[in-house]
Amino acid sequence: MATSTRSFLIELYEEYLEEASFLYEQRKTLFVNPEITWRKIGEFEERLEAHIDGLVVGDKLALEVCKRHAAEGDFGELFAATSVFCRQDQRDFVLAAFDQLDPEDAPKAGAIADALKYELPDAWIRDFLTLLESGQPKLAPILARAFGYRRLEAGPQLLKAMKRCTPSALPQLVWALGRSGYEQAKAPLFDYLQSEDEPVRSAAALALMRLGEPRAVQYCLDKAQSSVWPILPLGMAGGRDTLAMLTELAKRSDGADCLIALGLLGDPANVPFLINRLEQPESAASAAMALQCLTGAERHETVFIPDEMEEDELFESEREDLKQGKQPTRGDGRPFGSTVTRLSQEPAAWNQWWRENGDRFSPGIRYRGGGPISPVRLVGMLRAAGTPHRLRECCSEELVTRYGQDFGLEVDAPVVRQLGQLAEAEAWTGSNSGRFREGAWYFAGYARD
Image 1: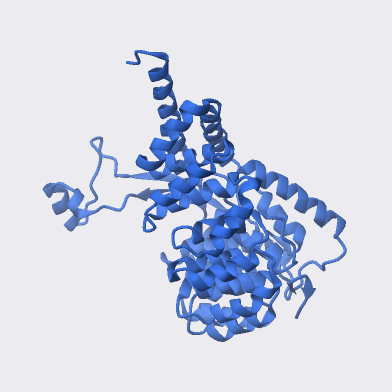
Image 2: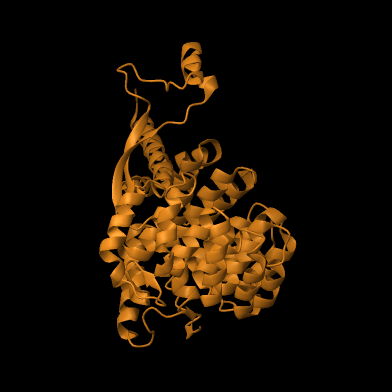
């Protein structure tokens, strides 16, 4: 029980931090929850903002509490504390958080990066560019993420940091270069495209495609027969030759990336094949997402998903039942698990829909969300509440790789920020309605066969 105003306020600010930590962690899980729309996440963000704002209003005493919890608390508290430090212009407190950070602690590194993505003060940019250039293992990937997210001019500093940083930091720096718009980065990025590290190659491929480098598409085509990493970038930037190659490759493999890439490429001739892949449990979810991407059919189903059971977490009697094929149940006899609504994975439902609607799709035309693909279609899918997070990621990339337009949109950004960027994108599509032919192939803003 608080015995003074000061102790009461300390308890209050600690409660704010605890609740902010919970909301921050929960928000990150919602992106992969099929029943939570991206706009619904905005409600959690409003609650998170209220707690951070309360800490900002708390001024010096709240700063003391934040400083202590930044060092001793969990990653969610570190996010909230770093956000407060930025808003209160406490640069030294952020640098202290850097010093205390274990570079192997990915959740805490991600928390600081997220805070800087959203809150980095303009007055700190010059000094933080110098820190980025140093390539320090703890700082480089965090600062690269923040600068790339904000689309700040950091190309020269990123290139210098890439020569000095540890290999584990390279994917983040390469990702940021792809968002920098720095033309001089193409040659070094092409070297990283041939890296032995698969995450570096994948990041370099997408970075080069965002910068409009056609050689990256051809390089990925050459490698896609023997590697998985080029497939999704090809789905977001490849042409008709990519369609032919990935269609053949998908028939010989069951990889999720290949199915989603076929959905992105949008050839209606692949719909029966994708429906057939719904019958294979390991590929059903990806095939359903690809079908939704191409057709916009909005086929959903409500199903019970049993929990995966670890034997060492069960009682002896439950382990015996499991060996005999009996699933453990709750006290009321119901099995462990949850009922969810998801994109339909039922082949019969999709076959019926295709029989009723297939004649709306013309051969040789690329489709997205049920209509010929265009910038308007991409922005529409980004705005639609029910578009899965992974498809929203791909659509945001395609606005850049296909049509050469970067509105700074990141699909993990706060909802309010995304809505503003989508309004800007819609205004652009309206003023460029006659520039791009619907259903055609484009790369870097130019038509291609």
